[in-house]
Length: 193
Image (cartoon, rainbow, N blue to C red; front, side, top):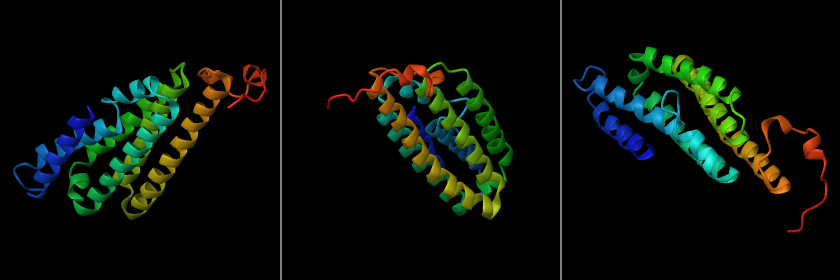
């Protein structure tokens, strides 16, 4: 999925050179939307992100989400400056993708019983908010999006790092409902390293 997303994004970047009135403008924007949606794990093409969160360690997931999200979103921010017509002429598509990702990510996060997939779905929700600010916010939205994506990357590393520390301390993955509950307070012994 990620390789397909990268190919679609680079294909669209090549075609954008024709400009907003070029014959390939719609195809280029469609490839960009699909490519960025796949790379950021946005709804409806989010399938890879929770699977990665379930299958890998917490810190690996943190790095994957932080690096992919920050790198890809910074590419979107640069594209917003270099080819603003991609967002202005097709704003309805970007807004719909952002709103669906915000709502879908939040609802899917609430439905989770495992902590790492819940954090992965909250990442989808976060990126939806940032995308909405990027498309609608003008200059202030761009500044907010820069700050938001950098804080998103740091926050995901801290959150997944906390889950990793809890996994190490407990010897298993803590359930979402155990946030500071009696289950986590039972054993306060220091583990040998």
